[in-house]
Length: 258
Image (cartoon, rainbow, N blue to C red):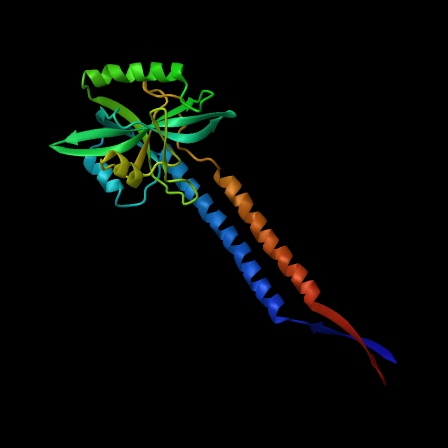
């Protein structure tokens, strides 16, 4: 008598559905990480290959709102709008709580007024969760010199499109005369300040005399890390398929009579 082993594949509908969904999710996550890595590569190339800066006008800014664009540096001439000062709340720097000061910047050309947001940078909070008075008074005095003389200033900015986060608050919190927001929203500020602002954020160059503690809008995660994450998701998909295959396959020994 001889013993033969036959391969049997056991497939259950529930297990098949779980396998298809899980594998699809893992592969999708891997592909998304690869697309993010490619996007970061394009951003770096755009920043590194940017030509020498020249002044742009309001038509350039309005054109940016009609398309997707990568963060890049521009020069812009206009004036500040200190009547509409906002604080982007709950920003942490080196384990210290603070906020970013946000203000519209006004560009006036041929009777047409265009506004965009300017991020002046980070300022620490005091015990009452208000901007530190010493830093605030110093910054305001510097800004007031320009505003009182109604001077136009030339700024170097890193412009980036505003990103709406559905998980962040859209409410305005009033604290001791300050206006705090959870995220920068053109619709929210237009409603509160009765002024129209482009959905563009200009982050002030750190060398500007009006800058607080500024972080350039480069990339918070390099392309290589996105690629590594993609590899992890693909390896998890392979491991899942191997585990399910091993569980679904069984060897059944049957005697063979001669």
